[in-house]
Length: 341
Ligand SMILES: *[C@@H]1O[C@H](CO)[C@@H](O)[C@H](O)[C@H]1NC(C)=O
Ligand SMILES: *[C@@H]1O[C@H](CO)[C@@H](O)[C@H](O)[C@H]1NC(C)=O
Ligand SMILES: *[C@@H]1O[C@H](CO)[C@@H](O)[C@H](O)[C@H]1NC(C)=O
Ligand SMILES: *[C@@H]1O[C@H](CO)[C@@H](O)[C@H](O)[C@H]1NC(C)=O
Ligand SMILES: *[C@@H]1O[C@H](CO)[C@@H](O)[C@H](O)[C@H]1NC(C)=O
Ligand SMILES: *[C@@H]1O[C@H](CO)[C@@H](O)[C@H](O)[C@H]1NC(C)=O
Image (cartoon, rainbow, N blue to C red; front, side, top):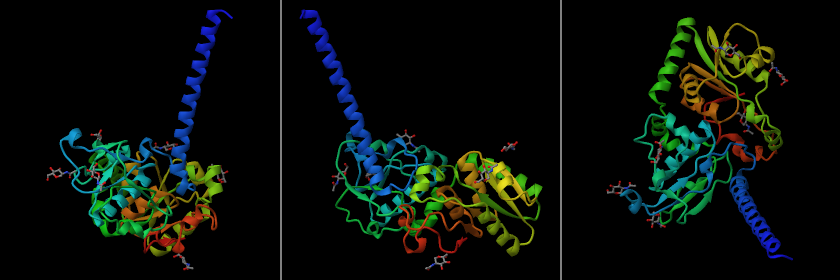
């Protein structure tokens, strides 16, 4: 064997080794993240944001000229607007009740809200160095009272979806204040609502939010997610027509065709095409009443709406992995007073 072929072999071996190590690292990383995400929340097919990895904290003094003065609770926010609002609200209130400092990663969705002074953005403190005690929620959609009393001799990373109003009920007013949307979104919504009111004077306006998309994937269905069928919307609309005089429905959807061919062609409906999530949520929250189907986006629009809320009750298949996340007849998830149909 010549020197040259031996060198070539050596190079080949090194290249193969390097590739193997890279592949191993990537696979490990994927498995680690998947484990973290799915260990407890396998049912939920929420989209991950990049910062879902558990957050650790550096000693900030050298980093920012400020320091953390008491123990903290941190959370890598995940998902889109509705999910982030749940996690943020829960975290805010858990921290407050336990006299901890809330540390949040920096999800884009929070750029939509007006109140940066109240929203403490501690992303400057976050790094991958020091240790925290990890606490996971037990169920995505039921209340876990362990978070009511966290001894403040620890720093915590808390992890979960926290889809229960009970996590933030003691902070409701503050949470709603924090979640006021930025002026440009509110103004855009004002214009649209103004036009609707002009076009439909003296009518009771009921917003309708339809959510299907990621609740109909094969995986979501296997987990037990269910979407609201056309009959649900008919039932809910009938309820409002019986209860109020002269109702019009403002349907926010990305598919008018679906509504027209599957629900109704009746002329008491006007459509609003989906725009920015913040604008759509603002509109839904400000109409007189609201009908929501499934998902966290609709949940929050309903929570922010001051009128009558009708919500789809059968968002899960009983006994399914997703369904088993709802304890106590779903009363931790649905807000008291909402009409479940
Ligand atoms: C800690 O306390 C100092 C002095 O009161 C203050 O300037 C600083 O902002 C506090 N740090 C945090 C993270 O609240
Ligand atoms: C939070 O702070 C980071 C780092 O300073 C910054 O890049 C980001 O824009 C801030 N996020 C919000 C929502 O203000
Ligand atoms: C919590 O984290 C802060 C910031 O890294 C650190 O100064 C403090 O010692 C930690 N406290 C505990 C109890 O680990
Ligand atoms: C109406 O619903 C059916 C059954 O879900 C669906 O297959 C069809 O695509 C829907 N029609 C439209 C126009 O979306
Ligand atoms: C809304 O979307 C539909 C298609 O679903 C389209 O026909 C209609 O022109 C759009 N309306 C506005 C105001 O953009
Ligand atoms: C569960 O809640 C629904 C809706 O509020 C109610 O109609 C039903 O009676 C409850 N079931 C039980 C077993 O409490």
